Image (tube, rainbow, N blue to C red; front, top):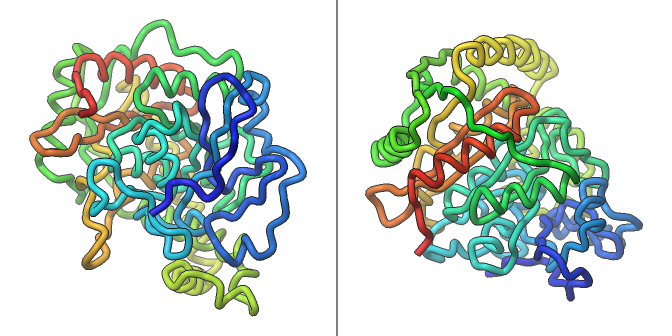
Length: 375
């Protein structure tokens, strides 16, 4: 098991920063967690654009972290570079695709880590590893020098032990960033059609919201499964383009079995399916514009389950509560909250485009009220 693909001797003296190995770091090859990519990789000529603030701040970059191959799964398993161990229990999945970034933070090997999130790849490992993670508004953080999976859904954001660490991470990504002066005036507790989480997770989210003192209103949201279908159609259609060359020989045989099979399936998404997904996307974004007229932020669980076992049958549903927010392009915060379970639950807060400042101010209030303390 390995948290890092490349460990580095830090040159900076500031915050210890781990970087997901699909973000270019000058002088270090970018592997995207994939041997087929590593075969062709050369040391990056320059940093990815999102690293400029960290360099200017003197961040101590401790290494490039393991990820699910090509960032194309939320389970966190990597058949080639090994799977980072969940810090609560190595028999449990760490979540992905930003698995190594989450584990580096949870294990105390980094103060902040950068991850990417296309359908939940920051929030799912944050949930399974008991840390905080922030999916940023699509387009807010530049993606130049970041390995592409699905450009219309891809985002980069910070991961940290708590909300204060996420604020630090955002100041590295966006110098001058500061949380809002006050939390949201109201929160809409989303109930999504046809989906529910483990009752202990649902209860933990409700209890954390009750404790925070911010008015909460229950809101129903229809169309959730259509949104999931649209998200996956767009993601797969774009992944089949960005990574199509990896299905050619000699690269094909260097792919892990799981990612090779998924890429092959992605090539079968028709242009009509992808187009229908984009038409639905516009309606979906309009739906949230109406919801934010009722409540300042929205809340629901981050994942439908606690971290499942590594062994045994693959567990579906890792991104069922996260992917539709990528389709909407919205920022989303995941924070751990106490649950009647040996693992914490994870509460997800959703805001309008560009509301990361409000999300973190509100998340800090909820975090303090919920009182989760990592053992």
